[in-house]
Amino acid sequence: MSLRVLAYGERALLIEVADHHEALALYDDIRRDPPAGVVDLVSAAASVLVVFEDEKSAEAASSSTLRTRSVPPADRAVGDLVEVPAHYDGADLGEVAESLGMSVEEVVRRHETAEYVVAFVGFAPGFAYLTGLDPALHMPRHRVPRTRVPAGSIAVAGEYAAVYPRESPGGWRLLGHTTLEMWDLDREPPALLQPGMRVRFRRVTR
Image (cartoon, rainbow, N blue to C red; front, side):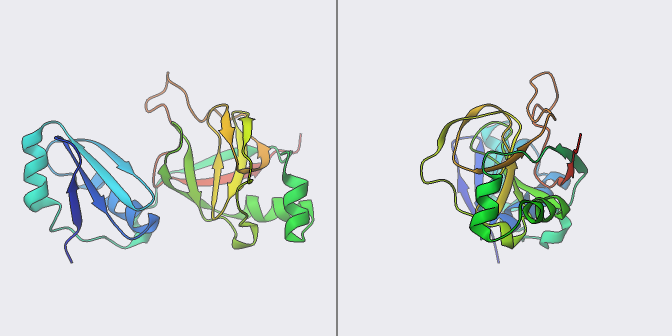
C-alpha cells in the first residue's frame, strides 16, 4: 500500500502513518536510504517530515520515490545505546508509588530495568519521547502542570518516559534527575538523544 504523502510548504513532505512505531521505522528507513536532496528528517508521533534542499527535489520524491515505499518492520529502528545516570529522588516518586500500589523501590526497579527507544523528539528542543516504559508505570500527566521543571528531570507520562533537556513548564511525573547534558548548543547535533537510539537508566547510589 502506498504511503500518504502530503506537501508541507514548498520544500518539505509530510508522510502520515499509523503510530510512533511505524513513524520510527520509516524514519530509520529513509535515513538509511534517503531520496535525492534530503537535508533533514523529523520523526513525530504518527508522521515523518522530510525536508529537501529545493522545491524540485521535493516534487520528484513526492511523485515517485516516497510514494512507492512501504513501512518496514518496526524492529529495524534500533540505534546506539545511551546510558543515563539516574538519581531517583524525584518530587513525584513517592506519590507515583502510592498511586500504583508499589513500593518506591519497585517503581525504581521497573523504571531502570527497562530498555527504551527514542520514538521522536518534540515539545521542546531535545525533549525525547521514550517508548518501552513498563506498562505498570503508565500514569497520566498532572492535571495542573508545574510552572518550572528543572533541566535533567527524569519523568513519565502515559506510555512514555523522558528527560527534560532544559528548565521548562511541564506536567509529567518526576521520578528523579540526571546530570547528563541532554541539550548542548556546542554539540552537533545539540540533542543527545535522536530517534531510534536505545536508552538505559543506570541508578546512581552515591
